[in-house]
Length: 67
View (cartoon, rainbow, N blue to C red):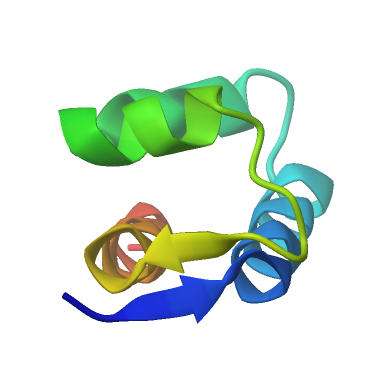
């Protein structure tokens, strides 16, 4: 299984928080796969390794929420 640095994940999450209206971030998180929500619940640190699948889920869910 591949991993990605937490800094990449936290940067995307910060971007999503900044650009979604009230309650938007919560709706975004609810749309994520359960495993990704579990990963985020662990408070991702910038220096930590995060499963690549979770990173892809975050990107794809963010892209879907723009449509």
